[in-house]
Image 1 (tube, rainbow, N blue to C red):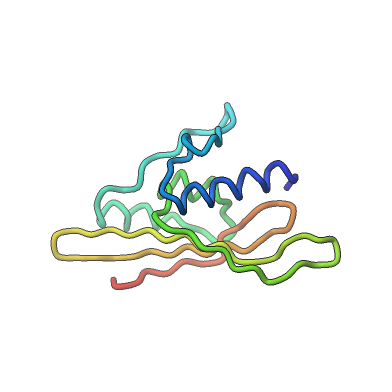
Image 2 (cartoon, rainbow, N blue to C red):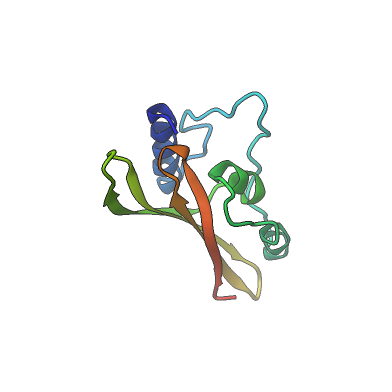
Length: 126
């Protein structure tokens, strides 16, 4: 991952945390990538989409699958000898249906200069 890619990812995380859309944050998808879809509107749709989550997926894949998260967090675990940041990125999605409330958290592990990869995910209040 280049420094420019890392800065773009950092801007996306910050913009998402502040409630802005990816377009408003100035992050454009490449011409070959599909546009980011909105979050599934119902819990049932979210459940169907989350079935396709896989370890190792990149952030762009998760954005295509689930849309933008409502909340983000980043935990730093220091830096290695090459000054590459190590840490965990967590995205939180929440759905509220008439009788149900569910939260899905997706954790990404840093791949150094290559970006982020899904480490795991968990449904809460489900």
